[in-house]
Image 1 (spheres, rainbow, N blue to C red):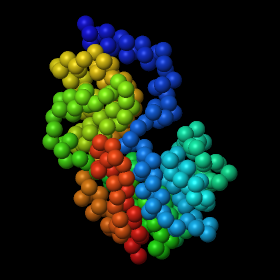
Image 2: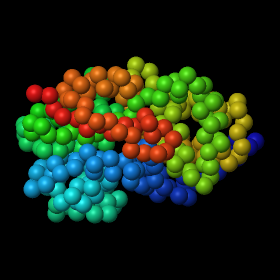
Image 3: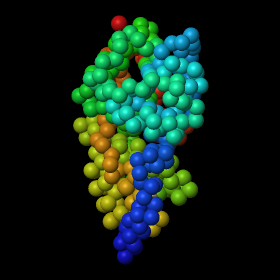
Image 4: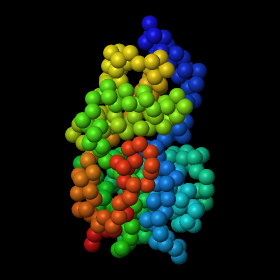
Length: 289
């Protein structure tokens, strides 16, 4: 009976507060580790250093608001590059300093659109590797390498699998989140849970939203969590899993092996202080000749 009531309340919540489930609102409430924290932006800033002084050129892959604000703070000539043109204007609602007057927007596929070679002094991309199919990651890195000026910088944050999450059962991961103050910090809890489930669900270096949904429904059926936690998990499934694509999910050693084919790893830093932060390192990379 409680399970049926929870599902009815969850469905009613979606109907009454449908705006909460729209793309931009879901993105607004996206928490660490899926958006860079202030500390992680500070790591980006530190790695950039003085590389953009004197009118040097910056390329941002995607439209991450935090990176756009950083570019505006540094007074950089900034180019944004993404396949979805609506993302450039749409993400402005989450920017505090960035303005379109200081940016150039380019619509294009990271893998196929030609970028000028040896052109950008700094290239930034937050969690971009996991948005590219495993088979195409080398192609992307080669494109970025060619677009960097000699001695330029490619700075990126990546998600590496936490091997402990691979060993734990689905039930252990869900139970652990139930101990987090999920009612008071709902979106933080969703972010941490999603990261752990990415790791657990990984098959052939891809996260599986289907397996996550199956495991969550199984947990709700067999574990009989509290009514409040049941509502939380149903909302989590709607807002985080329902439209999730199969993101790339790799071990740190595999990611570093891939990066080193095209770049020299100059530094790697953990910028955040949240749970799972050590598995979201930020790399300062220099292009190989």
